Length: 243
Length: 217
Image (cartoon, rainbow over all chains, first blue to last red):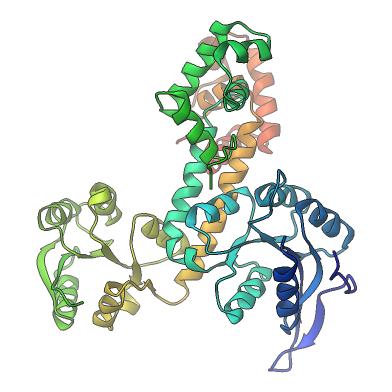
């Protein structure tokens, strides 16, 4: 986390144009895998009078450590959706949301589509900014989100309706499955046959086919592939093609 | 707008329809049909396939959302919604149903012609502040969906059944009979449900479950 050099108190009192004391300078954590982009983001954000970079990180793991060490009550954490590896951006957003409910989490995309935004919001992001907007809009979005507004800045802003539909879709299929059915589906996503799933779970093959039939019924699909596609869209299982 | 744009106008009140028709005329949009009910508006869109629908949510037989729901993928490319009132949830609902503009009649009727021209050019047009309100509604929706999925993931199949029956208005005794288990066991399930939902009583449990989308009321 090369660029972390600021003291932990990132929110300071300043005077606004009307002479009132206001709290500005939101502390920002930048999570971005590419060093050059990260350095650019840090510099750009630090140049804003309302924002201050508290730390930056190159990976999800590093980000968790960094946020844990900072003692701030409230940070705006910018998470690049392009984080590589198992612990991807969605994992990070979910983990941050659980462990640090007080912080603001902003997904950050590059020409992101509505589906990515839906998934980020559903996973726990408070908003979404795209790197392809103008600098002023980018900074304004961070400030706005620091003030508790839900912000979507970038091409996806034209698709709020689609994003909402996407959230609804993610919600729907999972909630009809029992934990056991989920488990069966999860194992099925590895491409195992019913018999192999049965062996893994220590149950009879018949039981597994019953589970699968019930899963298909609940998801309203006719076969395993369609079930997996739906489940992956809702974040229940992960498939490589997803997003 | 090189080609002719044809519009269907829907509003309960004759005066409102007249204002919309006038505004359409001003920007060379041809009004092919006007309707005062959701049913007639839906038919008009199906038979005329207009490029534009200017839709007042206030209709004689139902609210304007009915039209958008019934048209489904036969909705005109551009839908402009007019309403008496607006809040984030209403605007988000309109956006989800494919609306490109949402203006209140109090603020929007005066420069309706300009608004129509803007939505036709592909711009989203909303009364001041509504965009932010809709974003707020989107955020709340995402949070509810996430919380619902989390809570739901923690419920056993039995607890889920009990929750469904509970919200259907059944007593502990009736649930016990239905599931062929003892009332004591039902009570245990109910207690666990309350804890997982973070509530104290039945009414709270049902309303929380409905908010989270776990049951349909």
